View 1: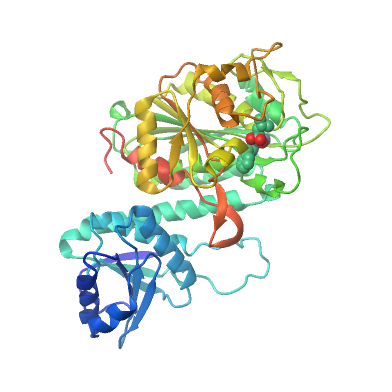
View 2 (view 1 turned 30 degrees about the vertical axis):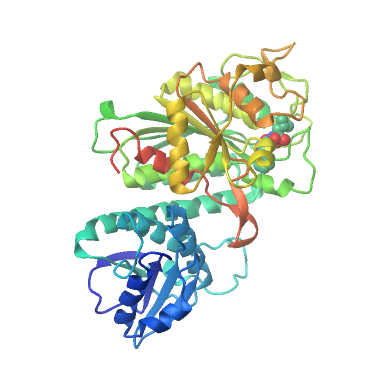
Length: 499
Ligand code: BES
Ligand code: ZN
Ligand code: ZN
């Protein structure tokens, strides 16, 4: 998609979308559109309330004006959602030349923020889930044509900031769609080596380093917990390590952030096998890895001023004669022995190796892991928020605020030592599950905490309920790319960081 910024209300593109909030300023916004369209404002006022998602189409001699309602005092995600939904539903009416007008709107606040949300939503609305269809239904979205143009109509004084925001919105959307593809892919099209391949290609394209350790190297490094989960698999594991630094800033002044993502390409539960009803959702058990991939890619695309390390341990969790069994005692990278009570608590095993490897070898200032880790989080927060755990109040506050700004919400749960009994083992240094159907998300977080080498600024996001969700864009649950926008926002607001 080609982006253009113009400030002339003459020569309007054939389609112009005008975001309009309800409440204060609505009459003025309608008046502005009415005069641009050569229409009577009273007629428009009678039909259009600017409620969230409301669409009013006005035909003029050469342009279709779409008034797009944002509701009252819209937040970033309200604008994004309205545009995404509009873009999906009205794809037939949009052309390869579409404009978004800020000349006629009444959104209060920084215009650039609304532009980023609008462009991001418009681009995401073009996503198509049917990648594996042999007989595609319908036509593509006009804005996904390579020569499609998106024109932002804004005052001259806002042109530079709006252009930057539009580029950012588009860059993030493109990465998010690639992450949708990755998470939506079924496990037979997505082995650990495919995740590694995704990262290698992304690193090459956007200029960050990627290497993937194969089975031999994983063994040589002593990543025994990852190997233990992989025992039941037909495919070798991968341990993917990514590193990004901006080209123009010397690393000394940069914060070093370590991201670790759970990359289970399919979770059958292993011998503690899952019921079959919803097992197909477990192709999304690499949602944490996907968030880390997405954040790495966007950071490199936008050249964010941060030193970023990403680690993704990856395997599937399958059933086989060689698979680990409940009661097995396994080794780990940390040197701690783990009693496996439940083979379905596999995510914490591979993350234990990922987190410890990160802490020991990279010593980042801050360490954040993301994982579709527990059903307990889904029961606690439903599909609306991730569970947040942290041993650092400032870090927790920053992640929470990023969640509020982006709509990728999260809520903190405790890491009190009262829960430590849940992971005490008689026969090993710790066990991977308490055996009780209580406080499951906290027990998992306490387990991870044992592998961070006492790092003072660690956060864990349990994204089990939010990585793969119902949406108006698919008839079944599908990928959300949760975490990409959250992490990018968090990284963009780091101390001394520039947006
Ligand atoms: N991948 C699952 C968690 C999950 C559940 C993700 C629902 C997305 C939606 C994880 O590996 C798992 O199986 N967790 C178990 C742990 C239990 C056996 C201690 C769970 O939460 O039931
Ligand atoms: Zn599991
Ligand atoms: Zn899992």
